[in-house]
Amino acid sequence: MLTLKLICVVVGLLSGGVLQVDSDWPTFRGPQGNGVATSSVTESWNADADLGETEGVLWQIDVPGLGHSSPVISGDHLFLATAVASDGKAPLKVGPGGRPEAAEDNGEQSWLLLCYDKHTGKEVWRRTAHRGIPRATRHAKATHANTSVVVNGDCIIVFFGSEGIYCYDLEGELRWSRDLGVINVSKYGIGWGFASSPAVHSDRIALVCDDPANPFLVVLDLKDGKEVWRVSRENICERNWSTPYIHSSPERTQIVVNGWPWVVSYDLKTGKEFWRIRGGGDNPVPTPFESNGWIYLTSAHGGLSPIYVVRPDATGDISPTEEKSSNDGIVWSIPRGGCYMSTPVVCGDYLILGNSNGVVRCFNAVTGEKLYEKRLGAKAGIISSLVAADDKIYCASENGTVYVLAAGPEFKLLAENKMGHPCFATPAISDGVIFVRTSEKLVAIQ
Image (cartoon, one colour):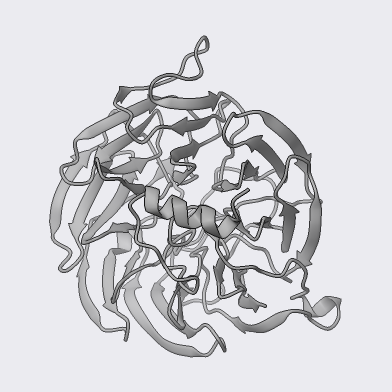
């Protein structure tokens, strides 16, 4: 079997991506967007001082404000977004029971971009991108800073939805900003908050703005923020919190956008549609990603929880049917078995999914055969997306535990690592260190 590192290199070449050094984790879910690191990471630690002396912790610091923004890394620097409420600590609902309610957190906020030294945790600089009253509410379990930063070359892109998009250089100097208007991703008449991070390829930025009243996909020029093209997603998507995925091959570069009732692929150059799939969960959150040369998609809620595995050269309507779960565009699919909040990961031959109810599932990534379904510990809601390193799967949980699973056909729990606070953000991995943002802290584990 190929080593995990070689698999990552091959996948990067097949996708037309630029190979990154092990130290870079420059976007949500890493350099290839698939959540897989090429370096080894420890499997056991304790970051909760209330349980005794901490073990395996390189450093940990308090993070101001509240945000589910995941850490990203470029060179020696780690970047993070957060929102700081002027009237004190922002409320956060933790645990099961996601009733449709907005948080009482509508006072003045400061939206910050933070830069840290990844080796020491020392703050290098911070910038206030925007200060004001939020233009849309957020869900009680969400924050006003859900999206993750993207680093591309010497540009840092941070998108706060209704509070605008900002481009900084690596020293924190603002290059440009744009206001895209109010993006109120709502359901039941409640603005649940914005969560779709930017996707960058070469000199283009793709942003999904699926406000039910005016859903659209827009591509901006990286150098100045000017609009290149925009397409309406009316009658395509009623709401969506997923980050777009840009897949590049010698034949074409496409933006794959989760959504409901349609998942759609667009030409990065023009916005022309390549393919679409109908159906799925009616609250799409997981991000598409590539592995094995295919594009993996999932969603859940409202009765359906499909998994689709799509060929990148697909065209037209490739929706599967009850009679036929595969076709010229779909390698395999299942109507139920996907996940609601967390983006899955493929490690070797295995597709692993974590769910907000604490259930993890494993499928053969090539054939779709279900291998196991197990529940983790009490209140182990998996909101954070999964990441993998050295044939180990890291599942950061709402109950403040990072569960580590062995990649394989049978369920094998290697460790339960206490963080001391709930985990909603997705971990980053760099140079053998895993960086975990909790609701209170940023922790580096070596």
